[in-house]
Length: 158
Image (cartoon, rainbow, N blue to C red; front, side):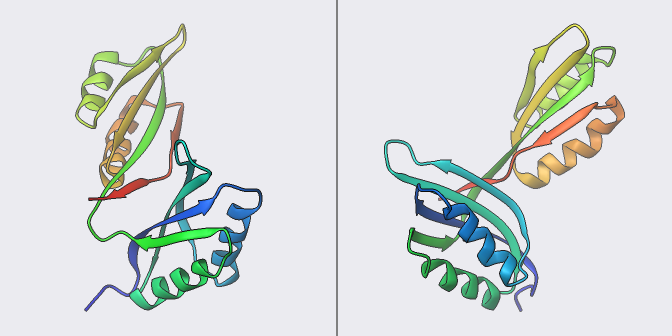
């Protein structure tokens, strides 16, 4: 039996115009569905944008969301990913007094690196699967991060 509240990744291709994002998020909130992650970016050399939405729900709930999304005029395509490559990025700021070698080694294990060293801070970046980013953020906490910024997920079907 499918998990009734499983994590789902949905891509929506829309015409890149004002208020489209608002209409899509209104659809979710109006029906009481939570968006865990939302990433929007224009599709290169086109008048379209791709929204990657991470949410949770049963197959029935996701089918309902998909049908409602199709009814919005600027929406061209909606699909739930079955077999996908998914990545997420995190930027982390550390005091310069922390061990830069250990931070760099940890980040490298998660497809990351040190991206900036200033007078007072070290900034590191990782780009990996969301669960792996979760894991790194737990591990890296011992280095006293001053700030962490995390992107939303992006995904492509294989």
